[in-house]
Length: 496
Ligand code: B12
Ligand code: SF4
Image 1 (cartoon, rainbow, N blue to C red):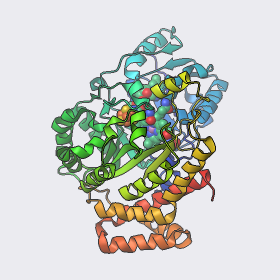
Image 2: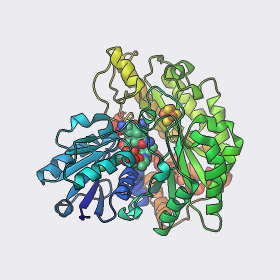
Image 3: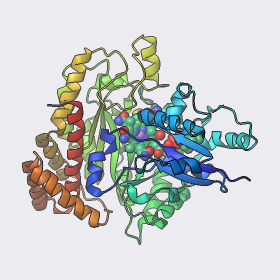
Image 4: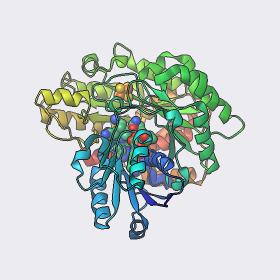
């Protein structure tokens, strides 16, 4: 077998709410998470091939990297399109062969004429055929499939290719797919409705791998919906994680799940016991007709604030995704979203404008109705949308900005942190305090407590926490830093 020098390339993210760029500076980290897709692809490539990862979010691509490479493997989400296009131009100018895969190319490969080969959908299924043809010098341009992979066969990601210290968190995937069917979601298009899970032994082996590499921080389970298969979770994975955490300092986990988590006290208890301390939930909207419109049936007819509080009381911080711009939305939606977010104590509230991603049912409907305006930027929180909304576009845009101004301005933001800390039960496992946390505190005291316009709120929060929730002090500082990031991003979108 020949040895191919393979350069795995991950384009830069723009500076968005999800980049956490302004918060990462406080802890001296360069990016939130490593590119798990590419690390998984690396594990699927022949062992004999030499591999190098360049994640542009943590390091630049050098001419030496390019000169070294025989083959470039490129991955990207839609939001990374500008950086991906620049990388394609640079790699082609250097005469390199490019193989592209991942969400951007799986949805829109026709828009990249300069790319040599597309290995689309799940690499477990499409990469073997490409590798076979490539080594026989007869590789086709496109490899795609409509099947879903058996992820019990997926190898552990090659963590050793990444500089773990550059990242705030590690990622790990237990399942793919989600049983629900929200109209705007492209996860189910790409990964199906039947949640496929890895075995508990695979996940434990991946955690062992991370631990061996010296990782002692947070781990994000990047599942679309961790609780898609509750039975496997309760009987296999969570007991295995609980056992794994015993006898070691342990790693804190966070994940994504649907709101019906609140209906299952046993599941919440097991998750907290296993080390989960946070969960991202697509709340979307407090408006039942908008929920019906997008077929988010699991959120309908519920007291969503009470659900959130139940999850917080179980020891899981809820981060929430919210959307405005549904056809059913009326001008009252903006204030209702703000009120909801404030009452729920969801500190990390990611509010976006509805966008139609390629291949989704929403995209198909809007196309049929003649309302599509063009392609989405891939970031639903950049204040743009790609279809003609029912509400007047200027009113929608202004209402959206008003939400951001209100929820991230210091008064309501810090109030929300207190609302949350009142409910939240301290998680079982926390990250060990190290010099980075100490530095983050000093940095925040200077930047936010001395120079920031939120200084009054900052010290009020810390004093309140000291007296009422002293064990949450480090979390309070972290959330104050997040607030700084959110304010920076929302100010860029919505200058006062
Ligand atoms: C983790 C994650 C993140 C992390 C990213 C961390 C990182 N460095 O990658 C964070 C939290 C930062 C994030 C943010 C966002 N994300 Co995100 N994220 C995910 C999530 C949940 C998991 C991705 C993952 O790691 N999967 C595990 C790996 C193993 O799977 P994979 O990447 O798909 O790779 C497989 C294949 O795609 C393929 N493959 C991938 N790359 C390559 C390359 C080659 C060469 C080959 C051959 C194959 C191949 O092989 C792999 C194995 O099968 C996905 C949901 C999902 N199910 O994909 C959304 C998802 C990727 N995110 C999405 C979006 C929209 C966003 C945001 C833009 C949110 C927003 N504001 O609207 C932000 C943007 C970030 C920013 N800074 O601006 C969309 C992307 C849609 C699209 N078509 O582009 C997804 C699909 C979720 C969704 N539908 O909403 N995200
Ligand atoms: S619950 Fe989340 S992952 Fe599942 S279909 Fe809805 S938006 Fe997609």
